[in-house]
Length: 441
Ligand SMILES: Cc1ncc(COP(=O)(O)O)c(C=O)c1O
Image (cartoon, rainbow, N blue to C red; front, side):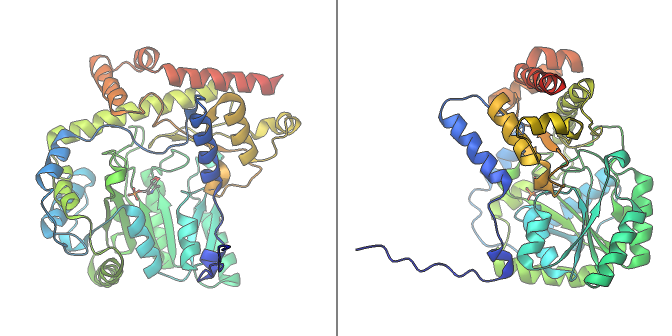
């Protein structure tokens, strides 16, 4: 009997328009290479790789017996603990009612995008997930370009121009998403720029979702500042344990809502969405998260240590690119660099490389370097931008990451640390040098 297949009818325009992303096809190619025994230097993963802190894994084990549904937006003890954490770490006065937890900040972002506004303003480039979420929900996007000459910082004049344009074409965009420290550029918004943006947002009545998932991975040059410090009534902070605690797979995210009536209304909306979709964050994870957010000095020290290591490794990638003459904005947070190879456009075209994806594939096929094309972050396809992440190389397993921590504690000198403990990162630098040498010929 032949198999009878009735093609699926997808429900809305968002689902019908879905394509397999460039990122996924690149990952498939990497997997194929791995399966055939080829060595790939993976600069594509944006995942912090350090082991689970023992106090947190202990707390999870102790709470494995917790099996009941919990309140949709989080248990009170956890929300109180998170409120104290934000006060101690970021000098923000937050009451526990303003704290909401969810299964990863990505889910909370989706719920917020669903709940708020009719149109969304997004900087370009920005993290891969924002645009597809808006697309799934069916909300139009107003794109605001940011420029390497301005460290990819949102420029208020450009923002205003783009908003005016979209008011003519679409309507009135009311929701802006910002992200500092930034994925994919690794840059941070300095406090004065945040203050300026806060004033503008207040004037325009914009609600701002401030994705601060990398807040504790600031390299030390620019202090992390939350827009909620200047514009509490119109800001929602997103955070979680995925980055500074390397707990992406635990799926734990936080949103800090505005005070007052706006916050209360949002809380009610999130309560409805959360209880209709995910019910609550897994009970054992909620209890373990209390320990993760407890301002415990050992855990604080661990966060600082991991951040310093991220900073050294990311800076090494940046220095390598700059020494090779590859234009790249200086990273000040997270673990990404975002160089552009556009100045070699002709040399690249001669090799059949005409856009960002071609470039990523070329580097993968010829040099076994896996990167992400700038297009994944909504950059123009001829910008020849790539995102390189330092998080995976030489730290692929718990054992390797633990060795790095021990080595850093024994000698934190960045040069020695890279030289003696990063054979693969050094090999990445050598391959990038070979590539640039090829283009220069
Ligand atoms: C900018 C940004 N926001 C949010 C997330 C996702 O965080 P979560 O694991 O809390 O969903 C990531 C992860 O890559 C990210 O880069």
